[in-house]
Amino acid sequence: MAAKIPRLAIMGHPNAGKSSVVATLTENDCIAIDKRAGTTTASDVYPVVIDGRTVIEFIDTPGFQNPNAILEWFQANENERDLAKSFVKAHRADPLYAHDVALLEPVADGAGIILVVDGSKRIKEKDRVEIELLRLTARPRMAILNNLSNQNRHMSLWQDALSKAFNSIRDFNAHRATYAERIRLLNALKAIDQRWEPQVEEAVDAFERDWERRTDQAVGTIITLLKDALSFKASKTVKSGKVIFQSGRDRVREEITAEFEDGLRRLERDAQEQIRAHFRHNVWNVKSDSLLGQDLLSEEVGQALGLSRRQLAVVGMAAGAASGVTLDLATAGHSLGTGALLGAATGGFLGVMGGKALAKLNIERAPNTHVFTIGPVSNPRFPFVLLDRIVLYCARAMNWAHGRQAADEDAPDRVPEKDVVKHGFTEELSAQEQRTLAKFFNAARRGKESDLEEDCVEIIKRILHGVSLSEIDSRSHL
Image (cartoon, rainbow, N blue to C red; front, side):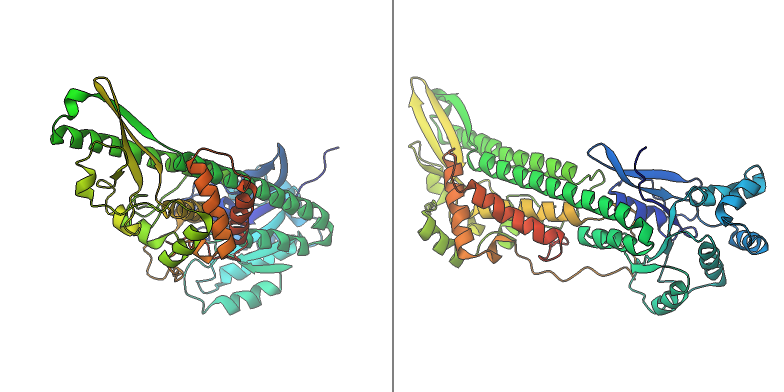
């Protein structure tokens, strides 16, 4: 016989945010969420499957339509052993009660209850009716105060009303909940009924093991990006006759510069796509003015992320980081010798990187041809910028609620964003950790394996672990 799993019916009146709660708890942003009231008309089951096994099920139910009629029936039949099951049995064939049967059917089948209420709105008599009828079901039950705004004046009244009928009450913003908040909510389910504790604990353990595995996958993606980007090169072979004049040399340099920069962007995009998959995001909207919406090689990104000049100088001296060379860009464009510097097409990136070019342009002469090669990246700051940006992307993926697609981002009373200092994660590492990363970056530039890779894996994993547990600010609004 298959082991029983926790089944939770998400209940509440229309437009309380039930579907958003389900989307966030199941990490499923494909759940249809409509801001109009009453759009859920049937009970839909959303299992959480880990390693091919369902560990918990959430059931998105229709909103209450006739709570007074249900309560009156419950009170008139209070001697029934199981009121929810008896109500469904008595009214299953009655079309007038089709909606109410759909609502209570999961409860009749033994599901526990999570009541979702909008804590920003004042409590009404209808709400008290719903609270009482759910109490009479005698099912394990929790109430969620899903306050999606900054209006808190009604919260204490909700707490008082709910505490008389529910085993547990939790504040939970389905549009903003982080991983840590989701786990706390799931852990709280253990308190709603002692008989549920082993089942819920097993489900939470499965969540946490799966999250650890996905975090390891994300770290692997980040390490691969760093190795591929830092060793990346772009080459172009042209006939010597095409580079006799300066205009020809400039055209080739522009073409190979664009190819090199686009290659770096493509590697980052591929890594970002993998990270979205690791954390199950299909809907992904990034504001163009955020650091994740800016071009990787933009001045804004370069200024906000990476090490400070002082840190970079210390790390460079200690780790033997590539120092780069400051050279007038005009000179770089006029030489066909080896070692000419790339930087003219980096959109301001050269200046942001402390006066050092992103990579070197080398030209090899052969009979009737010239081979132009750019790369690998020689700028000592760029790897830290790249690491900060992919970690920032990962932090957003880990903590961006899947139910946020229903959020009204322009609402005047929405929960305000946190004030975040605009800098990355690597600045806050210890000097030893920064040196370890710099040495790993140098090996990656040369395409060599480094015995410090495992140390770098642990550094990145510690950052992501801290971000997911809210021990490190995820900077998710940058």
